[in-house]
Amino acid sequence: MSKISIIGAGNVGASLCEQLALSSLCKEISLVDIYENVAIAKAEDISHLCCALGLECEIKASKDYEIIKNSQIVVVTAGSPRKEGQSRDDLLLINAKITSQIAQNIAKFAPNSIIIQVSNPLDAMVFVALKHSGFEREKVLGMAGILDEARMKYQIQKLVGFKDIKTLVLGGHGDDMVALSRFCTIDDKPLEEYLTHEQIEKIINNTKHGGAEIVKNLGTSAYYAPAAGVFKMIKAILGNTHESMECAVYLDGEYGYKSVVSGVPIVLGKNGAEKIIELELNNEEKKQFEKSVNSVYELIKVLKKNNY
Ligand SMILES: NC(=O)c1ccc[n+]([C@@H]2O[C@H](COP(=O)([O-])OP(=O)(O)OC[C@H]3O[C@@H](n4cnc5c(N)ncnc54)[C@H](O)[C@@H]3O)[C@@H](O)[C@H]2O)c1
Image 1: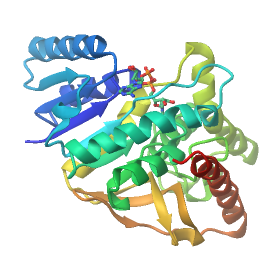
Image 2: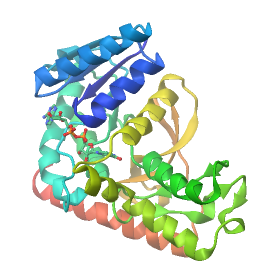
Image 3: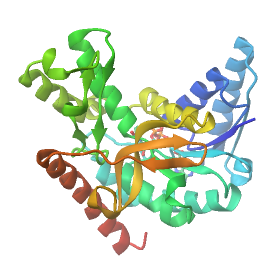
């Protein structure tokens, strides 16, 4: 039966642990955090939840990486979250140090696992995790597009109600994310059949700033929906479903880019990214994607200069 480990028992890590325990998707969850007492307390609390609901899931917690042995998937949520007024990029070097150490520990204790990176700045942290774990690129993925698409879907849903809404967001998980309205549908029809051009523009803008709005009101970044984004990826990997979803991956020529990480549609299965899907983008979409990729290249330059 499946074992999942989560590094960082903070808001996203603990929410994910709870969602996994409630789902009965795995039988064992390990939580690692530098604040061991906090991780132990959360593991106990969620174990009590399981007992209350009659669910069987063993949850362990420690500051030591021994407990991640034999994990199929290791989710990395450790790091500093965004504070008000702080961009995801401000977190770059703080979280690069944390991520590189964690990636080395994952390679040592769970060498056959798939890494799902969550800490920001997301695309740059996937790059660090890939380099410092030494894993193949198929096994180091980042979660962001699923969250951004959920935020876009919510904006549309507020206007049209509960319909079959499909959204698509590519590129980096930052202010340059590329919300592709041309690929979005409401009950399989183009957005334009339900919404005006101005409404679509507003939806795209609100999608980009949905995270910052939560940070402003909450004082920290979102966690229920980010955890759900990871949950969706875990479900596809453990179930070997071959579903396609937007995830951050290292590009090696796809979309015309190399040596960079960006959010693109991938097919997910038991071995991680089974395929990278290349969509036919028009010139305007290519331009937006290029801008987004270029901002990740800039972060990678800083990382390389600092030996990450
Ligand atoms: N990709 C996304 O869409 C997305 C969404 C939300 C949050 N995030 C990012 O996820 C990260 C976590 O967010 P959060 O709200 O859970 O933060 P949080 O502060 O609640 O939790 C982070 C946890 O990491 C732990 N930690 C720090 N350094 C560690 C280390 N070296 N080893 C082990 N544990 C360590 C902390 O003790 C803390 O418990 C942040 O970087 C945040 O920006 C990403």
